[in-house]
Structures are given as structure tokens and as C-alpha cells.
Image 1 (tube, rainbow, N blue to C red):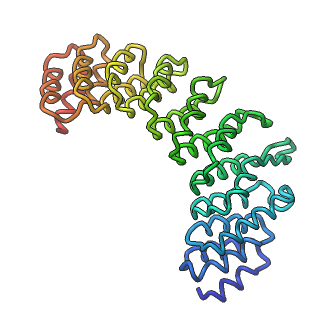
Image 2 (image 1 turned 90 degrees about the horizontal axis):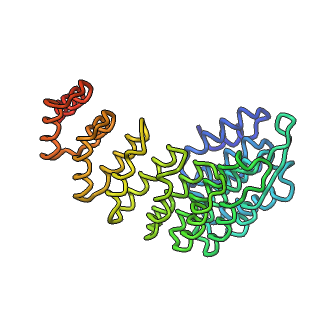
Length: 337
């Protein structure tokens, strides 16, 4: 469809037509679509404008990014009226981060603090959670030199109307701290994990991932206590992250923790042990194949590496294990080698 035809469609009185036009414009070459998307960004429909804001994240130049940044600021002047639900600004933040447009830092720093309470189903609700999260991620992506402080404050922000419902912002903050690649980002993540104060498990998982991504040499010290956490899924996740550290002593630590796990979480910990790239990890796996617990032996079969020693072990289990289930699993594993 020709550019002029799309421009005409973009000015249709029907919102659905304009939404369709933006989708088509987004597939054009960058030089052809930018002006049309900026026009759509000013659409009276928040849905159309939000769609345009997201599309601008691919290939927009600095001039367009400046317009996007200024528009972000204008919407902040009366958010509930100009951007109900915060979808336009959330998408603008996402796009500015993708574009790595550093002059947007002040506006993103403003966005990371916004609380916008609107009636949703007749109940007051903070609709700015995804906006704050996207601003945190964008600040990290543009490598703002002072962003760790602002993102860290968001990681510890539990003062909103419903703290548990806003876990998404704290998850985004943890992800953003990882993206910064900054050594300074290790501290807030460590503090959150050492003093979780009934934090949501999903947030703690993101913090664990971020701490390992940042290659904190003290990560094992922070993660080890979680192996005994009452939330066994969280405990198993900590085992996976411990394995990723590849710190000496990891294999023995994970092997020692296995008796405290069962079911799917046991499988996860055995797989974590197999992921440790150290000779003693394989030794521990082979010893676990002699465990009195049938489920442990089954888990080991799924985790064994494809080497000669493991092949010999599988043959032994297939021939001599007292459990029909273990024998069958070992034979199945052998058939796929």
C-alpha cells in the first residue's frame, strides 16, 4: 500500500482503521515509516498512540527520539487524562531504551517514580507499574551513569497500593541492574537477597539471576542459605544459580543438598549438579546413582553426560537395579545414545 494511502487511513475516524494503519506502517522501511509513526504518536486514541510508540523503537533516528522524549514529558503533565493506563509512556520508555537514546535519561528518571492511580472496576489501582519497570530497563539500556541508584530504589519499593501486585516493577528493577553490567549493582541485589522481608519468590529469582549475571565473586555466600528455604521451588532455583557460578566447591554443596529435595525440585537440583563443569560433579552424580531413593536414581539417569563412564553406569543400572522403573529408564537412555 502506498504511503499516501496509509496516511489517509491513519486519519480515518474509525479507531480500528488507524490501528490497522499503524501495523502496516510499522512494516515499511525506516525512512518511509518514521514521519507517519510520529503522526500516529499524537493520535487521540491511546491505543493507536501506544502502538506507534512501540513501533518507533525500531530504527528511529535521533530527531525522532527527541520528539518521543518531549512527548513523554508532555504526557506526564496530566497522565490520567492524556495517557490513561500509562501505555503510551511505557512503550515510549521501551523504545527509547532500544534506541539507547541517552538524552532521554531525565524523562526516564521522572517516569521511574510515577504513580498513577485510576479506577479499575471501581477500585483505585496504580496503573503505572509497567511504566516504572520499562523506565528502569531503559535507563540501564542507555547506560545512564547514575541509573543504579534510581533502579535500586525501585527494587526496594513496596509502598504502593498493593505491594505484592507490583512485583513486576521489582522484577524489572532486578533485570535492569543486571543490564547495567555495573559492579555497583551487586550491592542492592545482595541486600535484597540477604534481607528479603517476605519478598515475592519471582522477584528473588530475578535478583539471583542478576547477581550471577554480574559475576559477583561472593554470589555463593548469598545463594547458599536459599537451599534450605521453605519455598522448595525457590530453593531449587537457587541451586540452578549456584551451578551457574562455577565456583570451586559448588558440586559438593549441591550434592549435599539433594537429600533435602523431592519430586520436581529434586530433578532440578540434580540437573544443576550436572551443569557444574568440574570432575567432582560427575563423581557425585555417579555416587548418587547408588542412592537408596529410587527417585534420585531416576533423576540421575536424566542428568548423566554422554560419556563412556556414564554409558557403563547406565548398562549397570539397566541390568542390576532392583527397581523396574530405574531399569526401564536406563534402557531407554541407552537406546537414545
